[in-house]
Image (cartoon, rainbow, N blue to C red):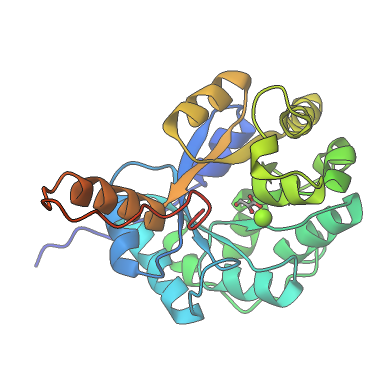
Length: 276
Ligand code: 3PY
Ligand code: MG
């Protein structure tokens, strides 16, 4: 009987790229669907993040998405709901190869996130194995401490002001800017973002801080043009929309190309109806 063999990771391709200064592009998974995850993973994204913070995904469905992402050939990651020891431990044990951790607003928050992602004596992660252990070479504990991607979210103005201290924390691989929460924390509406605004200046301040301490900066983008601009600026961890957004956009485009005769088409949902 022939078989294709088990997938093996010697390192983590995303962590490797981030640490060597290369850009990576991924997308968010908000549809809570392993089938959608598998289909997305085959397209060629570096990574896919299951959004456990802002989608209704259940824990076992998240694990199904990790399996599907691996099968499709991308790196499975998750955004945990909060900078929380229990969530971080369970999500890593379920097989994430990296985490995006929301609302990291101070160096202490960053140290806590790193400690939760590393085993003693580097941190305080408890050992109980991981789904991923079957797919990596060597001892999972050593592998995890070296290769999991640790991405902290900078999404408040307080975090922007401390970005260099946050990113200098040993064990942090990079940051991911949440443009919406950042705008909220600055008291700005979405109309007050974009080139020339205080919001844009804050994001560039984060990029400069990341470059000053040799860490990767990232950002959620809503168009390929924005991804291209950000890569040219030096950002390295770019998220482009989500499976939910791609599906809705394609469906909307298809339906609007259908000739429905004189009846008015349903209005398009507003831009903020579905962000991710
Ligand atoms: C935000 O825009 O606040 C985000 O969290 C994006 O992922
Ligand atoms: Mg956010």
